[in-house]
Length: 271
Image (cartoon, rainbow, N blue to C red; front, side):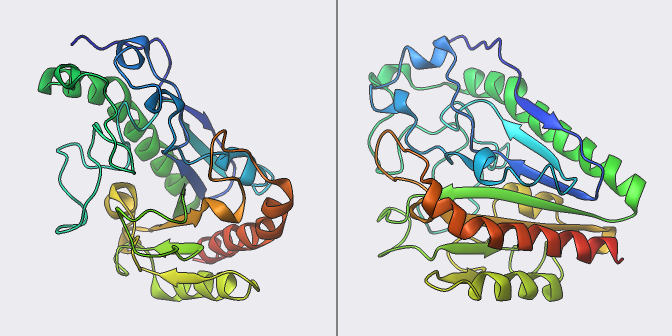
C-alpha cells in the first residue's frame, strides 16, 4: 500500500527556558491512505492522549518549549523504537504501526490491508523521523543555551484497560526508566508533589516506566533529565466517546501539574 501525507508531522513552540514538553500521542490526523482502510471505530482514534495541549496550557507561560504530534498513533507510534522492539518484554504492547486497539479489536477493516514493511518504512520516514529530529534538535538548542535541560513526556490513558494492567490504574504514573533517565532526587520530588494531592494515587516506575522517548533522550550525566507522566484520563476527561474534556476535573489537577513543571525547571536551572 502506498502511503502519503500532506500534514506536517508536528508543531513546535520554542520556549525560553530549559524545558521541552513532548506530546507524542495527542495527534488525531489520519491520512486518506490510512483512514480509508480502517474500521469505523478506529477512525474515531479512541486510543489518543486526548486534550493534553489544553490540560498543559500553562506550559507556555512557564517558558517551556512544546512539541506536539499531529498524526494518530494508529499511523505510527512516536514513542516506540524505530525497529519496533518491545519496551516491556513479556507484556502485551502495541507496535510501531498498530494493527489493533487497546481493547484488542482490529484497526483495519480488511486483514489484507495491513501495512507491509515498505509502508511502515514510509510512515517512519514521513512522521517518526521528523518528530524525533525536532525533539533532538530542540533539546540540543536548549542545552546549548542553558547548559542543562529537562524533557517532560506527557501522556494519558484510560484508567481501566485489562490488556495492559489489572484493575484501575494509578492516577499519576511517573516514569524515569527505573532511574536511568532522571536524577532520583528530582524524581522523588515529583512523586511527593503528586502524592500530596488528596483523592489521587501516584507511583514512580510502576506499570509505566517511560517509553522510547524517555529512555532514548534522558541522560542525566550529559545534562538531560527526562520524565514521563502517564495520567489516567478519568482524572480530567470523559473516557467514553466523544471523549469530552471535563473542566471541573481538570482544574483540580492542573495546579499539581504546574508545580511539577516548575519543580523540574527549578532543578535544572540550579545546575
